[in-house]
Structures are given as structure tokens and as C-alpha cells.
Image (tube, rainbow, N blue to C red; front, side, top):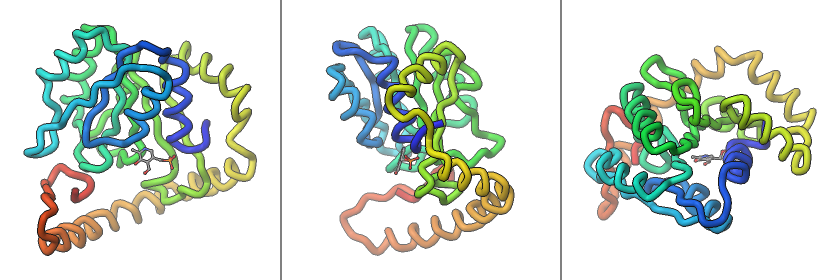
Length: 223
Ligand SMILES: Cc1ncc(COP(=O)(O)O)c(C=O)c1O
């Protein structure tokens, strides 16, 4: 357990990366995924998403992997586009990453646990999933996140964690426990609210000139 997804991502990148490594992320994407590896001294390729639908450019991604990529890091659902990889696409990415021996860190903090979703760490031995109680559970202040990965990586993270956070904090853990105890009600509430919020934003965007907004059915967010 970690202090939020942010620290989960940081721990994973700290363990997996060293200066000079090549990292691929997507753009538009979450800033931590390009800035943090750069700060570690890595070379970062920001792969532009295809604007019509904000989808992955698979050919360009394979070209990047041919550069000897150590890690691909991105969020699914993505912030800020709201687009996400379904099970078939996660498996396609897994196969490509396996071919070039690339680790995949998938920030799944916006995951809704629907049947058509699939965690990167469930299908790939070098797949890492991070998330927290911040979004779907609405408990951002509790700062309770986690990393799910193969036992070898978790063991390395646990050693590193001993020197950085020791534990997420007993008060946070208690609050998280209370939240998880009411998991079903909280998740149902979030899922009920999310289509209403999306509808509200979609209608609002139409009135904002100069902001190209794409609001497709498969997006979890309206941007
Ligand atoms: C993609 C992504 N990852 C992580 C975070 C931060 O999450 P947490 O509160 O779990 O640290 C955010 C917050 O906006 C986010 O958009």
C-alpha cells in the first residue's frame, strides 16, 4: 500500500528505471509519466494519440519499442482524454510489449471494474497496475493507493518502501477500511453519478468555442 496512486507510480518507476533508459508515454497524458522519468535521467518519447477518438497509434508504438524501451507508462482510462483500453487492446499491448521485453506500468486509478475492462497486471508478467481509493471511491484525502505486480517487483518495492514511507499511516488505513466496508454502496453511487456528470459536461462543452472536445460513447470522461 502507498500514499495514493502518485506514490505507487513513483515507487514503480524508481525501482524499474535508471538514467539513460528509454521510456514511452502517451500525449495528451498525465504529466507525472513524462516528467518523473526525465527527472530520473531517462529519455522519454511522448507518443501522440490519434486525435480522432484519442486512440493508440499501434505502428508508431512499435517503432518506439524498437528503440530498446525499458518501460511504457500511461493511464487507462486516460487523464485527460478519458479513453481507455478494452480487454482486446490490453492483450494486444501485452503481446507487443512481450515481443520487445518492455515493462508496462498502467495507472488504473479511473478504472470502474466493469466486465469489459482488464488489469494490465492480470495478463502480463511484466505488467504493473496502480490505483487508489481517490476517484471511484471519492476518498482522495485518505491517500490510500496500491501497486499490483509480480512478486519479485513487489519484494523490491517493499524494501524501497522501508526507507521512504514504512506504511501508509494507521489513520488512513482505518479510514480506507471503513470505505471498503461500504464498497458496494460507494461504487454504485459513483456509477450512478458518472453518466449524469458526463451528460452535464458534454452539453457544456458544446457552448465553449475553440475547445475541440470529443465525447464518444467509450470515453469515461468528456474531454
Ligand atoms: C492519472 C492519474 N493518476 C494519479 C492521480 C493521483 O491519484 P492519487 O490521489 O491516487 O494519488 C491522478 C489525479 O488526478 C490522475 O489523474
